Length: 258
Picture 1 (cartoon, rainbow, N blue to C red):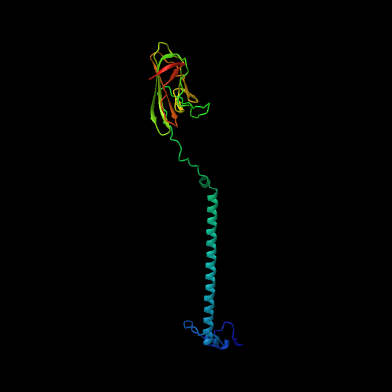
Picture 2: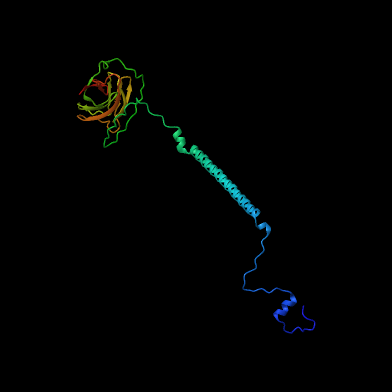
């Protein structure tokens, strides 16, 4: 406290101020005073507490690590399982898998050999015809004579087998008009002697009834002038040999075999 008789503007020294206030002087640049150690921070008990705290902290870290590993493992398993389910669903619903589940049936090992390609004529384009059997295809008697009392026409028919395999063949038929009159249209007939069957024909409309085969002209080759030759062809099948026919009729009249 200030002295009773001192005025406010009187000067006072630091020593007097310290004596009056009871403060302890301290150097501003010196080291701080050491804090007195507590009894609980020293000795064996303090060390044991520090070791216990360290063990508890390590145990907490281990527990946290185990939880993290467990969560990671469960999350990874869920992701893998979800991926497998998605792949399975996608595979089951994909068109490629559905098509793979229903493969096309295989052709039998005894499928007959495909027929020889039809020859191509430059002009006009041949129109293949598909035959329709009107009677049973059972083999007829070995030989059948042509109809009796059939007049003979001035014509020649050449039947030539151009290719043959174990159960089929390809043949060409050439008709030559040896007379002096034009034939328009023309119709050719013959009888197979071994039960052969016509399966495909060109440059003529083929039909078969039993062993009897009939070929009618197409619109582009219906006229057969004197001395002219018209050609047609066929693919056929056989079971008991393939001898060529030898008896032909053209427009109902017998033709010579060339």
